[in-house]
Length: 212
Image (cartoon, rainbow, N blue to C red; front, side):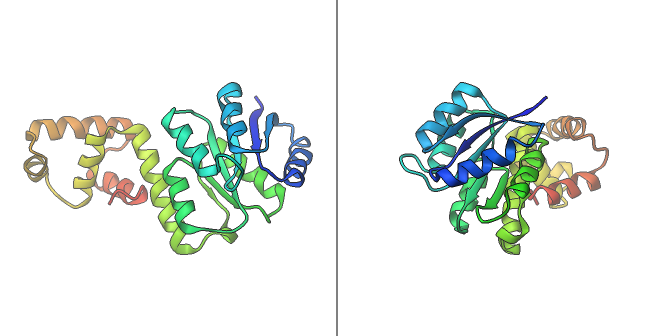
């Protein structure tokens, strides 16, 4: 099944280049082209695409405003963010708002196509040329926490954090003001959801997802 796209950019040449490239890809289907944030948000609501390719700077609602609205309305479309220059504060907020792909607009559209496929499959794509190692670590952590939140409840995430610090069930129970039996129940559910079978593996998961 084709990956459906909504493309949003206020520069016609950028949109034309994307359309030219994606029209050659058999696994892509373009649902709408948008010139500003309001059009992008309306197109996402109407077409419910798999991926929104979003310029961070646009007239009306900018990219971040679109992301805030999408998160508020719990829209399922995944977003790839394009930016002409890297602003670490903006990018960090974008990832907290659910962005899964980040690319500089100056990079070839063939890389954007790869990015879209990775994001569609549930992965995080941060083009190495566009982020510093420090920001990459931050974004990986933000994305990991978001992924964990899609699987675990807030209480279960808190349990995972406590396990990662090396605390035993008795200590976790005292710290969270719950019974040891409740801690064991939560751990059982966590192991089931994550397909893990030991505290060591759970601690490793916590480190990978930025929970430790």
